[in-house]
Image (cartoon, rainbow, N blue to C red; front, top):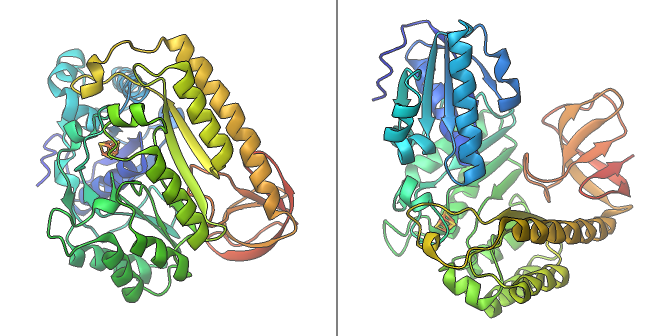
Length: 429
Ligand code: SF4
């Protein structure tokens, strides 16, 4: 049970959700739980909108503590919220999330102005209530918490602990509820969804879960899998994505690096050859499939040649989407003490080199859509255009399609013809 003693019945609250999709999901659960207890949800805010937190009584900040940048952002928001409280704009400041789990004592000392600290543990369960942070036609479904991998750079196992899979029946119940509520796109999320069920028994696996989910739902047109670890992405799952129309032809495959020495130091449990073969297999079995990856630049000891090897791999393999992060040194992780660390200016330069290469790759790839008709899920109406996404673009992280038509229905699918292709975005007539 959540113990939010500080708040009284019928008090209003706002929430600022920082960090990744998994945090958005946790924030939705928090809203749901508080609403059921009689608290009135006022609105959700992005960091940029935090000054609008009036007139709610309490402001909840769901923090992220994954890497340095995220930590700094969370601390800034806490600081500003306390200032808002001191200026009588809000009455209470409540902080939850990963940062609390990781640095609770230090935070309590540094921010005595915070009224309550909440851990994320209580939030890890299925729910079938109202969701307010994502659009009405879209939902995330978290199928597991924690991680069984131990990548040497990653603080997630320290924050979230070992893998805890949500039971199959709970997931199906939640999926059916969302299906009946009119969700058109469902994103399956977790730290490593390909590990789902491994803590139950060997016979449980993600393919089985997705088959069951497809059988039990019928309205969701797109089901997207987010974060499939290359080590665990099975042939049976690739086969299922290839053959099932409702599964987005989109594979989120974080490789993190490609040089064998670095992969080993990262404890990724996979080699360059295995990653290369996997990408070849995906492209062969699922023609046209978009592959998103993420990589870390400037991992300790990374040499210029090893970085060039990564560049060459990105050039040759043409990832449809790529997210790059400069290495962030995290206390308590095995990579923390590796030496030498790469100088920040070198990381920065390598990062820009990679991103400008990727921009050229994407522009080239997007040209393949020219004059083709694609299904687009409409998400926004602007003055002259409607804006949507294809199945090759994930919610909030990838590109979009600007359709030169006004007033298309938000949350509906339209077939549109692509007329122009730019860096990350497409234009349709
Ligand atoms: S797979 Fe690796 S990087 Fe991803 S959450 Fe688990 S330990 Fe972290």
